[in-house]
Image (cartoon, rainbow, N blue to C red; front, side, top):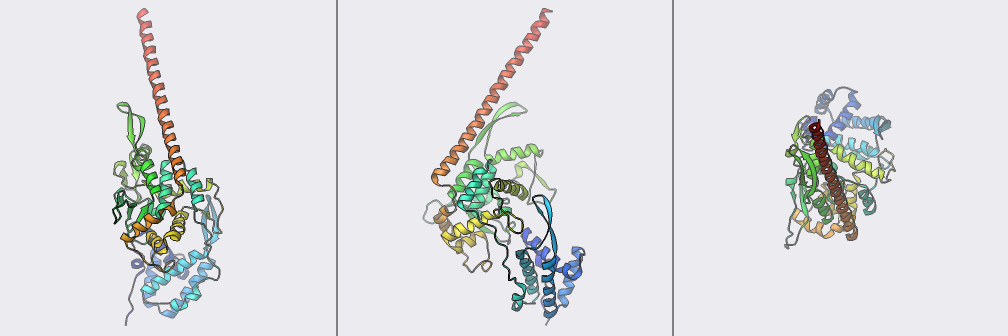
Amino acid sequence: MERLFTSVQQFYETDSVKTRKAYRKSLIEFGRSKYGDIPDDEIFKKLDQYIRKGNRQTVLDDLRAFKKYLDHKEIVKRVDGKEEVTRYAIKSKMLHIAVVQSWLSKNEIELRAYNREFTYKEKPDFNDQAFTPETAKEVFNMLTTPVSKCLFIFLLSTGCRINEATHVRLSEIAWDTKLSDGSKGPVRIHLDGSYTKNGKSRIVFLTTEAENFLRDLWIDRKYSRMIVGPDGKQEVSDNGRGWYLKAARNKNRGLVGYSGKPAGNRLSIMAEDRLFPFSNSVASAMLTTVIRRAGFTERTKTGINKLHIHSTRKFFRTQFGQAAGPDAAETIMGHSPGLTANYRLLEEGQLAPIFKKYEASLTIHRDKDAELVKERVEQQSERIAAQDRVIEKLQKQMDEMNILIKAAEVAEKTKD
């Protein structure tokens, strides 16, 4: 009986761009271990022919050779702007092998009986760290802009990946929700499967702390500024997000690049509908710089910071997981059962009351601290408003001076 056939392209085509990229890379590496450094399309054609004719023994031998290939391959990585030659970390090698094994399984070639051959006695270098409430608070206090504060607190509260956070649309956020008993529920955010890692939609929530910061600094509260337009000076009010978009419009001639669209397809500022309207690279640079500036510069063996952006996700897993249990934590994070441990996926209706009950585990400010931060933000806003008033007063004085000068010039001409 003929085996089922799953081509390379059929295997790696998923709704998640990130997963698709990872699958392609692993299969390309497998192909290079067999056929050398040839174009990707050629590799895929050869692999499709290979899997049709391959049998369990030949494939097993090739997978053993692939493991040796990964062990010895040198790769180039950029660390602090400099290129360094290194080798694959154990975690990366295990992921590459797992992807190839999954593709083989799709073609009805099972090698699970040989799994011990493709593990490593040395444990993977998982010595990066999770944020704690204390370290997260240190980084938060170093952030100076509304957008960076809101993005950071959003990541801590939701356990989202950075790519997911920068794709959330305003229409996917339910700000006012109720629990089954009629009490106020947490802000609910629907993550669409088109931008999640596993291609599946899921629900995340905001803590009251995160909700307050986002409403105050980014969504609800209006800030007034004096701007000069075609009709002269006028006072304009907008929220933090609106002022961010206006600044982007001025820098980019009214256009912004939308990461969910093909390259080169740019939208008007007014068409931007994301909560955080910027790219992953902007978000990463925004937070990575501050994490290092806060003094967290210790690195792992692979060269990354022990505390990095993904540490916000680890914060959610450790803090909320310990308080509410792994079932709720892993479901909200979007992990599949069996990836990290055996746990039970919870229904959406079960998650909201659990999150509300244990949200305190995800806060980084106590009530007193939160009030202090709010007070500082208000003081900063008042200082900006005061500066605008001073500038306006000086401009008025300059206008009056110009009128007097012109009047004096006219008087001189009249005497002559």
